[in-house]
Image 1 (cartoon, rainbow, N blue to C red):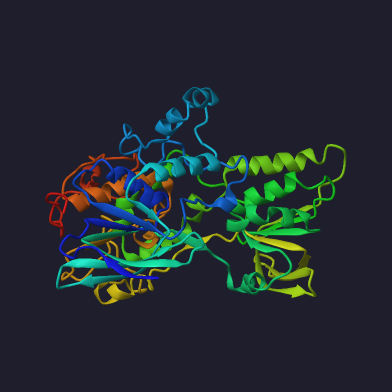
Image 2: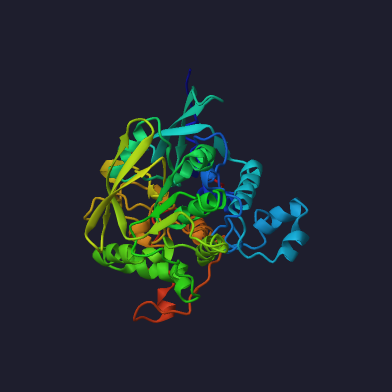
Length: 470
């Protein structure tokens, strides 16, 4: 490994992005035409990779194609989904296809196209630590460059005035199921790795899908379609009281507008925490089309008499789980409404148990003395997506898809990615390179005048506008 190569200390960058998922890729795309902004983005993976285990054939994203990386802020951007189609010679086929919701695999291909063309993206760069240097008024970002095998190749340090965190989420496995994942043998895979293990799961005698959200529904449907009629041998269980459809009414979708995000941010912490839990069906329900496809497939298998060997049980949690010999798994189940318990023996388990925000503690350990926290020790995030830091820190740390507790259910939604990126860039530059709409919803969420919900000169910005790109 070579010795650290450090950027010139008196020439810091304006922005360092950590992580290159859809959120930071959106920010990079919108930052690209801002010639005065010197930005670089680091990602430890070898290239852009968006939920590869869930790119099931036919599965669509749950937002319209207009919710790409840039369009809802700048429809003229060369990095729009329509621009991607044009470069591929596919505009007319897409026009005649009349698809408002595109397939996940196509969204992934679009993002890869952007990531491969944008400058300033550094893949195979693992960020190790972030510190504030009070003597130079800059952040220090230590990183490791990785080789093709993922091994350390060189160390580096970048100085920057501002940081944006877009490290995304990580697969979540509930504690009762964790021992199954850690032990080899019987197939137990998280939904995030489903396609990589699909053949071994399909080959199992009996398969159980745990989780009643969109991923669980898509995986159950895929398994169902590839199992022989009458011998499906499938269980689908989940904690929710029903295999519930996602809220997709037009007024309901206004919870994913900047108007609602601002309203939510202004609420008290206890109210915000209560709402996040209560609003699960806004973002954790199942697409109605997927539910219909499951029912259609089950119904098709009754045409010649009999019922498919598929059991769907909502309102069930897994209390404990263990392996029987080397070939079976036993799940201890509890029905939440009946207050009854039973056991289920299965040959393979797919854990569609969702994702959680990646913890920032290790990465931001060097900033911990400066970070202001709420009553539950979570970082406070202001309306412009900045961590609330000690006033002695003159730079800013922005977050993307790590502010569910302060900005509500729209935090992970792709439809708000471009707006959030534009908000960050407007704040960062001290200008308004991306004018944003003053009103975005017909609903008035609080007892105030809609015009008063628009960000204004409520407080002075802490940042000095960029001068000559530095």
